[in-house]
Image (cartoon, rainbow, N blue to C red; front, side, top):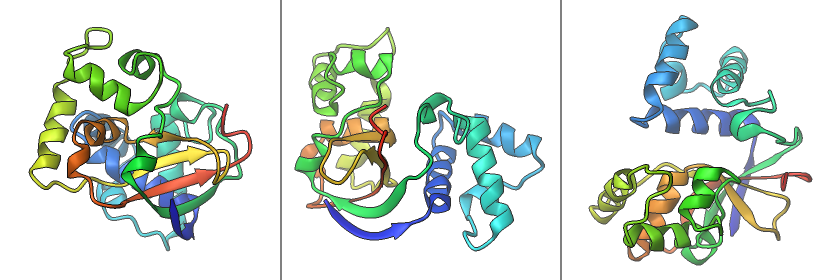
Length: 198
């Protein structure tokens, strides 16, 4: 992996929220939270990272939505001091990225938590917990048609250890379904901290 430059947590938070607001699955929940708070969706769609109040609001929003800084949901046991980077990852490195330790993703991958194993099972028509695989195929077909997806957000203990996807599980699976469509490198956000393995 090639690390391009450091970023702060506010940029990671902004990318996480932007990506999920663009998702048909997560958009309604985020829009409800924004309406509840009397906020324009542009606070997420076009974040001003120089605005301290906006940054603080987005951190609170990600907390309410996904448990950020609340030790809940996808941010359970997330360390406080995370070093964030923009980076480039190769397809071979991407094939080693694991899903979060979550029952659905464990089942879909046959226990390995690897998207390449999930992709093989999806090709066989295997579904996890009766949830259809149509969304994976939709994104895989979009990738074949030239779609470019938002950056994945990855986490790990350090630069030498294994990586886990924090945000972008469905996109990671689509990449595994259509590896021939991947460029030589993909842009990602990656965060490192001691204790991240929890």
